[in-house]
Image (cartoon, rainbow, N blue to C red; front, side, top):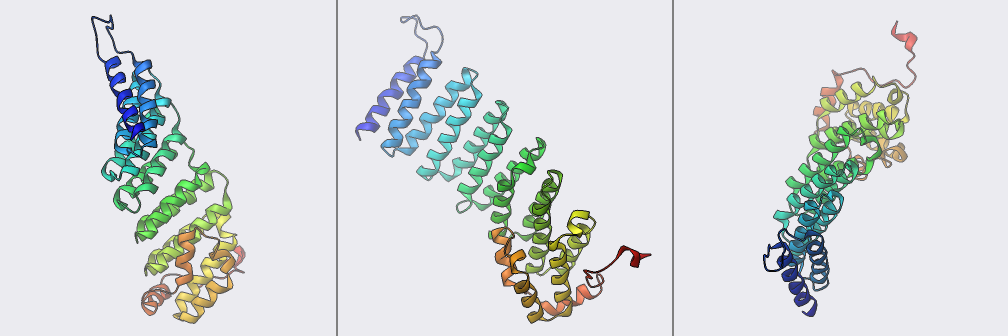
Length: 304
């Protein structure tokens, strides 16, 4: 209680410094002094677990830094405000605050920090507002891709993929996997690229969409580094197992290459272990007319 009262007193002092006073010859706000007081107040409120007040103090400190042209410091205070809102359970305010922090980081030319802020907000909201979490993940990835830094931010992609799959959004998860595959390829991360393509095949199969799984696989085979990878062989063998219509063969396929399937992103690996899922016979019928069985020993000369 003592710390909360001290915080209230600091806020009052800060507000006076923001107000104009002819008597005190203060013709403009004293932002440096007021901002420092708001920061001290936020610490007091946090120690008192008065997170609602802490959040407001951090926001005012952020405004003070902004008025001084210190975007980086403003961003850090907005991030603290977002965390305080989380502790207070004000979930409707969490996404806007993390977005504001990201914008301030971007203003300070710290694009990676901006994307990280959006990703942190997404993780915080995953259990409370899944839709908002997915939107923040999407914005984080778009920010990285705009700056050409996507290949160095695999964790952000993996978080987005995991969140989408945990919510049962297979198409969205595949989209994220394919975007990560492209980013990893551009960055020369060929192992990650191959895992992402195989993961996309697994997700579609788990979702019961054999046609999409086969289409993704065929498109990925046009990428040379994937076509000669272990993941390509595993994906082709898995599709062949589905094409046979034998649940036991599918299970043996996954078990036989568990080192590969288990090395996929956590949520994707969990789905792989559950295969086959859905109407296997219907999927086998779709695959029977979709493409020829995979042949790991196929030689280019055979195509002439």
